[in-house]
Image 1 (spheres, rainbow, N blue to C red):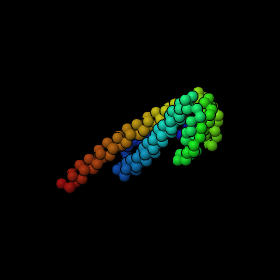
Image 2 (cartoon, rainbow, N blue to C red):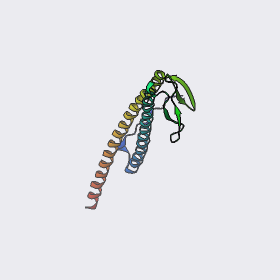
Image 3 (cartoon, rainbow, N blue to C red):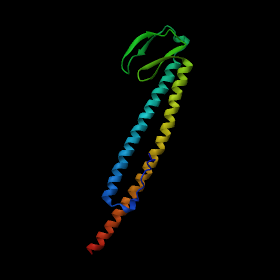
Image 4 (cartoon, rainbow, N blue to C red):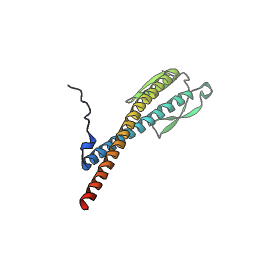
Length: 155
């Protein structure tokens, strides 16, 4: 199977309706990419919060009653008994017992991975925004050319 290369279009050769279609497509892509970026940042914030939560497992908190989250909105009282290990959600409903250091390392790896993807996504968003600016400039030139041509024919 051959690699699919993005097709390049000379915008100057398109008419205004075709340019409008390209603009709508670019706007849709930008919306999707910015939504994805927002979701990545939210996931990253959750993993950073997990690192902070692991840091709260300290000797001075042993046997204290705490609220244990069962879901995002349901908490039950519990006591912190094991200061060395925590339960880590590794995805798709699986939980693993890890030491606090292993848990922090796990969550930090997630944060770093998301950061890398967010940076790549940010570059893609910037390129799409540059393409959008260029497209708008071409559309404005075409509109000016049309206005000039219609002014000449009306004289």
